Length: 485
Image 1 (tube, rainbow, N blue to C red):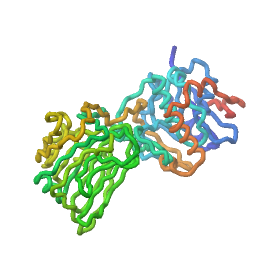
Image 2 (image 1 turned 90 degrees about the vertical axis):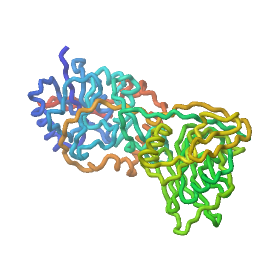
Image 3 (image 1 turned 45 degrees about the vertical axis):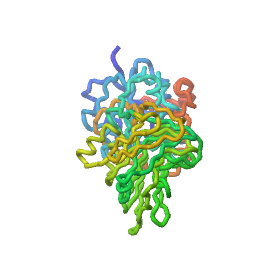
């Protein structure tokens, strides 16, 4: 069977664009040897615009001879031959270089504007969801449907693990624009210790450690909080405790005390029941707290003087806590964002690199990969500040922690598109954060119902579509399909 393309263009109240789009497409495709027809899907009711439902309705009306579809915005005009409308074996996004988007994708998962898909993949995905009225999220939903239904998609990895974090108070609880794509998955192998209540590790600081922390220090560790919402010590210098702590089952705290027994602290929200990387640094002028490579900082007063920790202990956990910890490093040097990233992505495998390239000195190194007679945690850092084990409620394990999320994207073709300017044509991401009841409702559907698995794509889409065709007008260069949604 010869391939035949249906170019389906959702439309309402843009006659000037329609009069430009249709002749441009015929001129562009005239020598491309593609058998195609253009269908303008006009929404003929006063409800908010429903792009996906219009596309679905036309597909439902088409004969089987149309074996692939192009869902096309009316304001995007192909201008280079890289815009290839030939048959595709997998969902393929064409609008990757668009004038109005400064020839960049608004966000990495964007597949709006111009999308090619064969009939089999579209029907297996049950088409677009018809739930999205107004602006936003229909394309993200369709991408999710392609993934769920087994269509071929390119696999990338998100260095920011956007979909592993959730902020219920945000308009977009997953910040889709923060996805940072990488071609390779990254992971860490951690030697961890699971510490039960009535057990802690502690040791009096030797002279070298005391000297190391007087002017600057950095604590780096991995933690996993599976326990209750009470305060927890992760790693600290005892007395007026300076170090890293958890509070209320929600907050990571980096805290430091001065010689007047006044403290300053930084706080970030962490996620329970998953491994997190924490770094807290002090350099006499500033404190910084990193959580999974995300940083906050605060300047210290000019006369800040660190509390005197002479003859004090190092504490790991405490007798009231339950916590999992791994790869605790104390660093004597001032630390940079680049070094924190190196520790986050490569951990102990990068220590030699950090030492040789950046002069980093690991003053304490507690890997939990070996103990001495089950009574000492051995410190393989510069200071050999071994920790005594109080209690026996602990187990050692090896953990694999994945530092990236899989992201599935359509095949992308880098053709260029001219934009037909129209009102409300501003930045897509900015529009998502404006107050708009339709956008907020669509965001709620996608983030809270679709991604959570509450909505079954097999039950909502082409299979149960409700619409009415008012009429189909053959206008020579295109067919106008008027639809009540």
